Image (tube, rainbow, N blue to C red; front, side):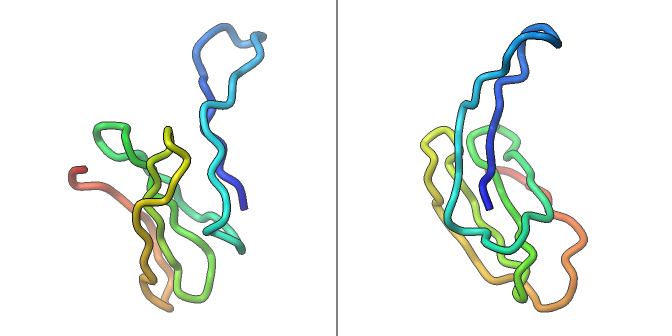
Length: 82
């Protein structure tokens, strides 16, 4: 799976620019995405058997952490702080 971060500024008819392309961790599905409060990091929650999460430095297009969460359904993700 690939995560794209787009620049959404500009008019509705204007072409949007891809700011970041993140690949290689979530391979089955991406169920949730959440930016950190500062906007520096992007958390992704995947649809694998362990509902794995990854934290990405989205501007640098690199993963900074990942973890297996739980075999039960994960209903959402949220940040408290960076």
